[in-house]
View (tube, helix red, strand yellow):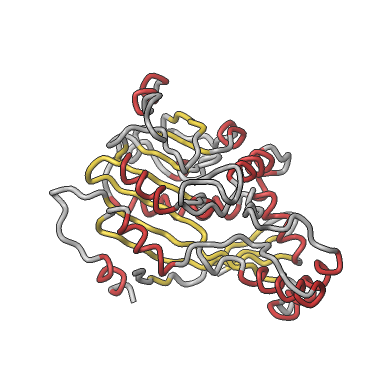
Amino acid sequence: MSCRGVQKLLQGAGSGPAGWTRTPCCCRLRYGPCRARSGPGSGSGPGSGSGSMNVFNREMKRRQKNWAAVLQDGHQYDYLREEVGSRVADRVYDVARSFPLVLDLGGGKSYIAEHLSKEVVQRLVLTDVSQQALKLGRRSDIPTRSVVADEEFLPFRENSFHLVVSSLSLHWINDLPRVLSEIHRVLKPDGVFIGAMAGGDTLYELRCSLQLAQSEREGGFSPHVSPYTAVTDLGNLLGRARFNMLTVDVDDVQVHYPGIMELMTDLQGMGESNCAWNRRSMLHRDTMLAAAAVYKEMYGNPDGSVPATFQILYMIGWKPHESQQSFCWTCRIKAAF
């Protein structure tokens, strides 16, 4: 796609904005059963914004992703993004149509496009808050243009894209309802949104271990694992954004690590460190040792490793069009059981 083609999409200046075994050398994938379930603004500080929630420091998240992108051995931390990206691509193929223009929202190094062909996606616009990640985008046969953009403020015109995809980016959004509405806005009528994000049960083992250890060592605890969206809320959020023909499903992925420190090192290498405003930047050494012991005692495997669960929520929603038949998304979910 030419630069002029991208510029035509941009708004004017006056517009508003299972398991893997992880070792130092390799990892091994074993996906858990898929479960289908029904579901009924950034600023300078935690109090900024105009009425919307401001849980995450978006500037810190940009710095974390830039830092992770330029790690010399950064490829060894891509295993989760690669797998989820391939699962999103599978859902694109399931639609069984060709998409002339596609937006990858928060795509980073482009973990979805490498699994797609130019017969399905003819042109791609790749966006991310991290300029470094975009510079290291993976090769693809699809003509691609990269745009540095915050997912919370999409700089594209209304009715621009035939498909919007997103993988493991939306769980760091402050105002998810607004972002879903923005995705709906930039989609053409009868366009489709296919996304994946971390769900509410993600890293529950780590969260419980840190809370128990900090309560015992320090007499109280503060959050060290960021909050995630519950699957029971996702359907309602998509419906509020005026998406039609909704589908929501869940995968649990377990990755097995030698210990808690290896898990936290990998999260940092993924650019997935906590960036909530109310986080504590440091943990006492005694608390970390206690958390490691609690983790192995409560969740440890017989071989001495510890599991970390990543709950992945997949979602599909269509922008309404007169050609679409009446569709009850809750019936679609129930039919999967």
